[in-house]
Image (cartoon, rainbow, N blue to C red; front, side, top):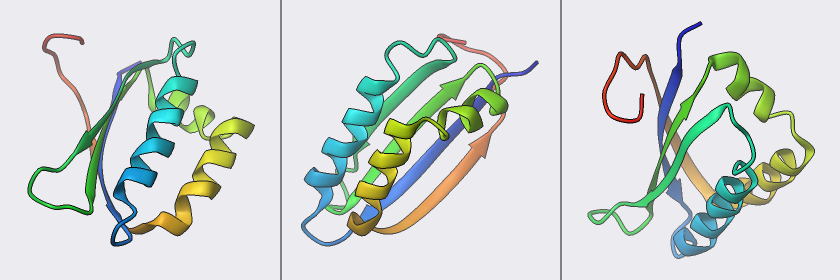
Length: 100
């Protein structure tokens, strides 16, 4: 089974980036006990006042998909949707490096 990585650029509605980042950090906190999630890092884009980048590393794509079925995750996603103006997901296949 190969690991699964995804980086996503989320564009917040104007003036809503901090609120969206707060929800994403709640999602990260909810993953603390999930051993399949090896990285969930929320980053503010210094060049775009509405952009947030989220970097994820999972033990597998299946583990990532399963995490999206968690009721608390579903609730956070529903709360975040009105704050999001756009999403650009980038799916990656990690091959090695620190943290791998």
